[in-house]
Length: 211
Image (cartoon, rainbow, N blue to C red; front, side, top):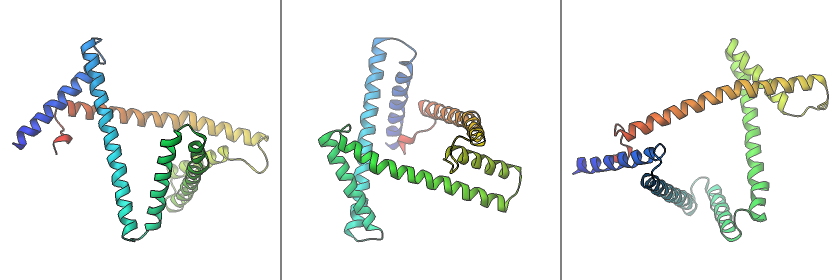
């Protein structure tokens, strides 16, 4: 019985994936409408999964607060912030000044602080790397990080000196050429991996839905 159920799910997944993929290459009304229906079902299931994830998050933190476990005040703050944000978003809408104020004056400064801590952590990690392993790649890493930090942040002497402009140009060249090239290579690798995973599921080689 279990084998038959797994086979049914595999056939359903292959047929759904085949019609969705076919709708991008064949301009036919029936296939196009069927593809839209399947995609809408997928979006609906993703929304339900998100709702279940949020409910699980609230239930876990609520149990920590009710049982007075370690770190329960942080869980209480999370629940309170979540409920306040949700109620304000439902009542006033996401484009209201209150909702935008919460984002601009709470969420945005927190994200900026985390990014600043990340930059400092990377700088400290780079110096520790050089102190422990002094080779060419470590020196290139630390030098690149210093150039990017110096070219991004403001200087006490002002931003009109020729040396500051030169460092800024080198920083832009590193970001636009080397960093962008590496990021595009990573994105291409992720895209190829996603295509390969989709093909393996489409051909029923992998069956994550049958576990």
